[in-house]
Image (cartoon, rainbow, N blue to C red; front, side):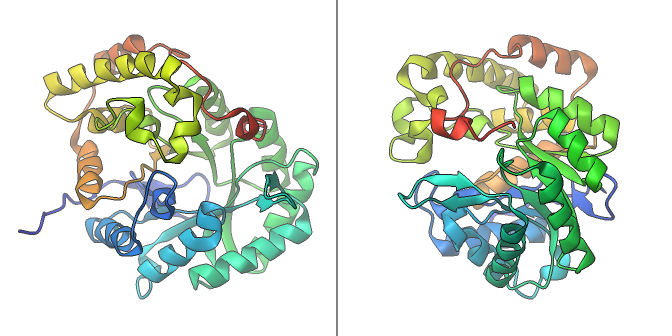
Length: 334
């Protein structure tokens, strides 16, 4: 029997842009094998189920599968482009030895946008992010180029990912940002909350990626072995010396979720959505059943006391281990 989906009925404006997005978006990265194998047909099925349920905010990037993800998303939304607020990101390139580098040069911004449009089979991108700030290129120059894409009609709004407050302020002075994307979950809040204070001051939306702690708050990961073979195995928070501690933190959320009659993932997502309408989580999944579970978070209501309880049971900076491997961390939060 086909599983019925709850309907998404909450929407809000994305910062000062003219874009209206569902209160919960869909991160598409996992469709390109980052967290284990996923058949294209399964990824497309999740995207279509999300659109059918009312989710209109899809997030991809040119680095996910080095173009594969954008191609998949473009094919999945064919004939339904007008239902989608489509976000993608640029900035990562391969170096001569295969290493990942960051490129924010204006000429590359134009080249990357055209390549993404081709893969997405789209005539415009709704929200175009710089995925990582290039420390070798002044943010003014990169944002100037992104603003030119808006003037040309290729992009409707722009944003930054993993940017510090001072970078956000400088960029916003060059051209208004619609959104800033940061990792934000009950397990990781320190830098995210610094950024959120800045985006609120500027009227910029906050998009929360990895809102389930890369699966730690999803309820299915019981040991570090559960992520063996995928990218998370390289992340310090899943290393044996850190995993047990972080798992215990997640179990505190699970206990409260059980008492409240919802799943751990639903409670974790509800916590973020309760921070304000300017916060939009974009959880990813490769399973339609998980998608429907995540949508169920929209029905979970938390009062001020419950929000305080969650914040107290997992204090800021309580998670053990850095959130990225050392090499990737050098390109984050610049």
